Image (cartoon, rainbow, N blue to C red; front, side, top):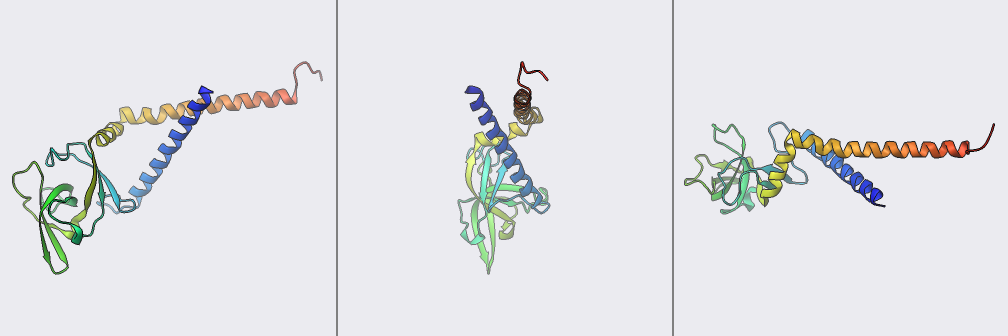
Length: 189
């Protein structure tokens, strides 16, 4: 009974990991070069710098929801493609400190919570990826660890190896049963 439960759990975990990998692969493949992958209007990002500490620690996982610029306001934390030439359009996540509207166009003044001054370059509405709607320091750290090949490969190959061994055992057991049914012991030809 314990073996069946263990096998079922391992099968479910393997299927979930494979499905997640396929979804992530599709998200990456359907995303234009230089853009953040998005599924159903949501993107996952991991924080790499201390500019938003203590609100958002390094390695935190962020869920960012696409949000029209007109719905953003001071105090919102947004992720955006940085207009700073030194950052070359890299994704940045800071808090909005000011909003300017010129016709239908929006510009946002932003600042990292750990910074004393606003960012040097205003962010256009077109550069905004979205508003941060979820922050998880421990999930981000877990993703960083999982991304380490020393952890990632064993996480995939150990359950896969166990499943292969269990399937081989099932095939052998079934083969023996078929042979016994076709050739019962003690029967002479």
